[in-house]
Image 1 (cartoon, rainbow, N blue to C red):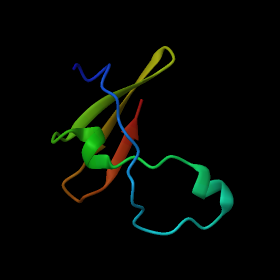
Image 2 (image 1 turned 60 degrees about the vertical axis):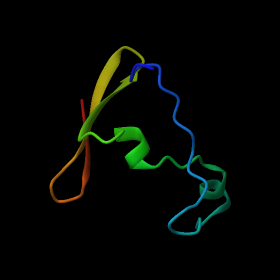
Image 3 (image 1 turned 30 degrees about the vertical axis):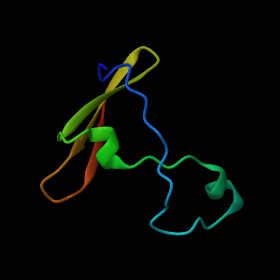
Length: 64
């Protein structure tokens, strides 16, 4: 499966309980599954491509 066609399943457990009904209805994705063991992935949104990067400081940065 290529990264552009890989399906990502929502996580079953949430680290923190949802604060509102809207948050409870939102899907939750585990960053480890998105990154698939790497430090960066590309996310296509329409005609644009974004880079999601996991930093050494354990932060996530999304850039265009």
